[in-house]
Image (cartoon, rainbow, N blue to C red):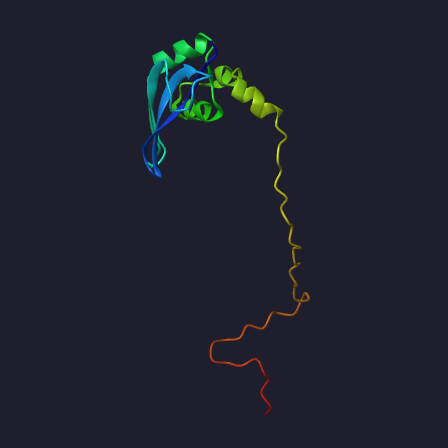
Length: 135
């Protein structure tokens, strides 16, 4: 029986909260589950993550695989770190994906024009015009 650690949607319409559960991978998203591991509330600022670390680590050590989203939540909660996070199927799947690089348009840098050496730059004082006076 392949076990997944995944999110089970709860809450009202357009106000989701999730339960983090260990369930048989063949059961539906909101169907039967084996054990409740915690909750995830993405609408809070910052996101509310309440997960029982002992139960979760027990399931991970017994071979349960977290989904991609659950893996990110577990890393954010500090339950999965370093090597443990890299060993999951979700991490291996993400490593196979090609990296999308953003193309940044470079704007040409305008070179600053400098006044010739020896001639001081003319600075107009407030109230003066730049036209030379005719006297």
